[in-house]
Length: 146
Image 1 (cartoon, rainbow, N blue to C red):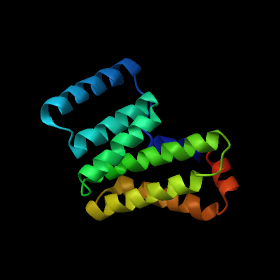
Image 2: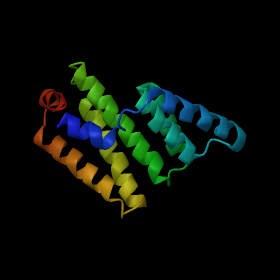
Image 3: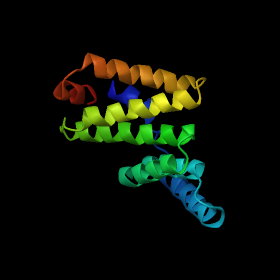
């Protein structure tokens, strides 16, 4: 389940140099034109691709604070929460996995509230809901992500 989950919610690995260059361009753009929710959400996705979870979470959280009605900001935050759950599970630390995934489902529900036609968010929400329901305790939930 974790590979499928990771593929759906966490951006695929990309060429590190290309991602870094895109991130640098985006930071220059934000300095010149402002850090909008859309730009911050894009930063979050790029930071995830580089493996920088803390930076991705910070950017996604700021994006949501900037514009609570930006569906992409909520989607980016959901991605960071799933990445956090996967990271915790990989360290065999079941504490926090459920909370991170429940946070992701909350964000995906918000995406669907803002954009009911978003099929990808709907599919991912259904998958996470099933995962949470079929693994009621933290240990089995964490092991299902490995």
